[in-house]
Length: 450
Image (cartoon, rainbow, N blue to C red; front, side):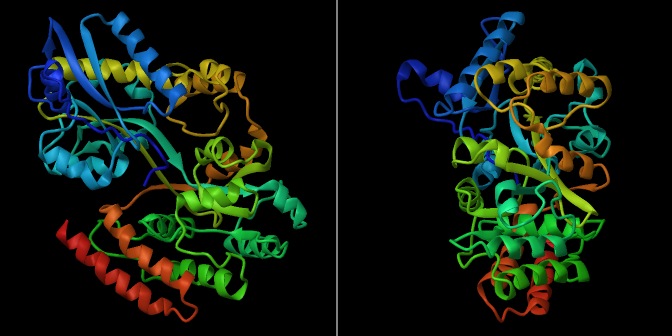
């Protein structure tokens, strides 16, 4: 899973004067030459509704084309960047861009169905590649070959409302470090009454399974075996996850009566000041402020309770298998310019972001290592406009956690686990042992099908 992003949609242009452009922009079947230039189609341009981001993106593409007059970049927008429901169909139908957005969990699948270009001979020309975190590079490396370039990475943590902590008599500078401490804090916050909820969790649209996985990791467990062939949810760690949720929901009444929540529901609760805690990545914070009515000074971030691990995810770009060598080289140049230059580009121009009242200073994404990371962090710190002290616990705590990627066949597995999570939150007599046994069998079947 990924927090909200942009999804491109390829619109068929009916005007005859634009017909050829529309066809070539939706696929990748030509030689990439247009008027003597190398043309690449790329996706994940912010939609027109995101005016500031759209203007940044367009300005950066124009600047890149000016610096590289032999390259023509054709951009496609959408929200979010990728729709899992149509992704495979677009790949199979030859409708994917030359340079296309992917979740980390897509990488091996795209390679397995032979839809990705091998970038191994070309990454030597990508000056930033060696500065990217190794564990993120590894996600796009399959059988020793490189098939993609990371763009962002995130890790899950605990977002909490400092104001509600204070009202409940809790220390806002000492967030819960264990699930027992979280349960106790949630109970105190819920006791404030007036519709206040101590802790909320997702349990629908695959998001419940996503959080179940994160909670398993936090306790040292996994949802599948190391070789990716068997389910490992019917374990003491899996039982602890569901038992904790069930106890908070029915014994403590600290999770509220409304369940089957998804991301937007929980964000709305937090933004309105009626929720104490929920699991998420740092990029939720500006959404809570800009769209849901929250306040930066009240929102803090802690590492995952449990102290053993956290789920990491993110996104990047892969290249169409039909791309020519010239298109691959042009696409890598574009990625370097747009996303992979520390302290600059679409995601890294912190001075521009600050000037336009965009949040600067959140602890993630943190893509680079070494001198590149130091430069990126230096520029970010110089332009910070959010209370960075509210995120220090997250930064400190993450250093001792195992960072674990999402499981194979993640979306299918999450759909199964949704059922287990939603059951314990909606049925007081839910049988945890049976739920885990049933989920384990279904996940085994998914993994067996590959």
